[in-house]
Amino acid sequence: MATAAGDAGCFSVFNRRDSKRGGAGFDDSELKRGYLVKQGHFVRNWKRRSFLLTRHSLAYYEDDAAAEPKGVINLRDIAAINVNAGRRGSFEIKTVTGKDFVILARNDDEKDEWITAIQRALMKPSKLASLLRCAGEFEKDGKISRAQKEIIKDKLVSGEASELAEAEALLLEAYPPDTPEAPEAVELLLQQFASVSRAPSLLNVLNRLIIVLGNLPAPESVRRRLANIAERHMVASRSRNDGRWSDAVAAAFDAAMAAYDRHQGIGAASGAGGGGGVGGRTAASSPITIGGGGAHGRT
Image (tube, rainbow, N blue to C red):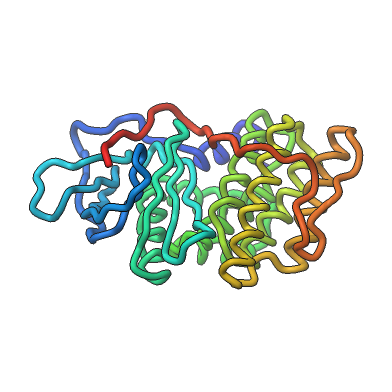
């Protein structure tokens, strides 16, 4: 069996961030380019910008002929990518500094293409290799079966954002909850809960949150964020009629809130059964913090 230190080394790749931005071997090759509409930060108008995605950044320009970008979002500073409920083709990039970028594609297909491309860029080859190695180690140690390892492998190599999130959630389920770095599992699962948008993916992440929140200490802010994310998903489900907030997802959300309350000893959560409302106390959502740095730019 692997030692706790070995498991912690495996878990550390889940939130790995590159510390160097340049120098030998710096690869900033183009991954995707195209026009999107971006909302201004100070004046809330919409402006068409030329976006360029590389392995390290997402930059936006006045047009294709512009030499200098109007702004740059470092990929290492992205905390989450959320689908906006209020407008079709719209998504939001949240950074670790709390600065948000609201972007509008021509349609949902184009939106999904951009989100997937960004998620693929965020999944560094070294991290992908490490997660595949972790899956192999977990199978060898009896934490997962051979069939589970193959499922995780297929999800990791697919490149789809929701599949990557589900693969990491499956690995987290097998991760021992009493190791020193295990509390990071709560943060990772909250990020995944905010990023996925299909009912099966939401159910997958919530089922893992039930396990983690029932075994790990977590601050009150976790409960508030969980409720706020659930509320955004319910609004999206109603406005887009995409069925993401199903009865099964609502029940899993209630169970996750109850697991948190039981472990913290603060009583049962009341809630969102049948998609009717979010349980527990709510507050303005907190920025997701997973590292230093930030994003900068002009409208």
